Amino acid sequence: MITIATLTGHPIPLLPFAWLSRTTAPITAIGPSALVLFGVGVCSSRTLAGDWRQNGLKTLLLNAIILTVADDADPGRSAGSAAAVRQSPRQDHVTMAAEPPEGLIIEAVHSLEVRWIFPGQLAAGVARWFGRFPTGTESREDTYLLGPPLPGLSVKVRGGGALEVKVCRGSPGILEVTGRACGYLESWQKWSFPFSPRSQGSGGPGGWAPVRKRRRISRFPLAGGQIAARASGLGQEPGCEVELTEIRTHGQHWWTLGFEATGPAELLRSGLEATAALVFSQPLPGGVEPGPDQSRSYAEWLGQRPGSEMTSAPEG
Image (cartoon, rainbow, N blue to C red; front, side, top):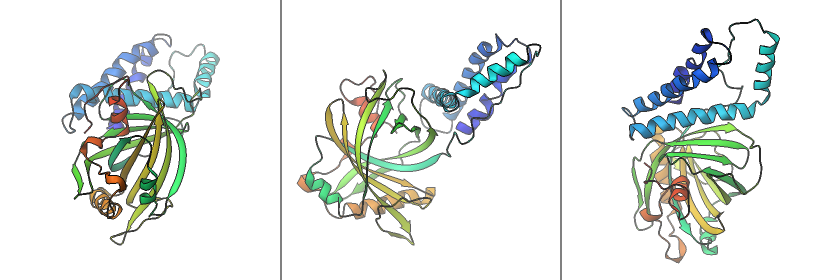
């Protein structure tokens, strides 16, 4: 859908420059471009689950984010364009490049995920339980966009170095490990963009929520039909990443256990289920049993917490 929006939306801003002045053409192009992008999202409702208004707004917002990041990634582009115009005062028509800066957009990643989020600090027993597997660790702060409220859309600045946009494509069902865990599976599509915020700091601008994370990560590549844990990255291999993460936001402690399977679509569910069966082969200590009430994405959880700036229905 992003590809379709790009192919249809990019030529539209160029049309007013064919017959209008350089002063009025940019303003004139805004309305038609927005309408076309909104229409592309509405058309997606015929093939994707969701309300036509929400799909239209999602497509419009995604492309607005891409254009904003493009400007931030190449701040000299606008100045260069202005200089070119000044050097050609008699030129009635201008040529505009619709391509984003080289290397700006990273290819979309499809994933199947399930996550549980719990209040309070992570118990030492749970950390030892997860420590049965080789793990890597990292600490970072992610900043999530809370508004406007668009269920199924997650936007965050990851660690201050990348903008990540995720769209939920629905739920293919429930993950159930009998007597151990039960949660909602969600299909996601993710795009990442190089991004450096103009202002650094943990306060976060209005409408954004900073979340500090200390992540323990174990990766389970699917090789030869067998699941085996390792701490190193999956690379291009199909497999499942499992994380046990301590969270702190708005002065409160939480923790989360999440599974994310990537690779060929036909292997996602079987890979995630096989990984979950291995991880939950031993029950969580302290009587903790992840269930549907704790099963949600970060964006949904942040939106439903008291005091957040958005409230939304469950995603998927």
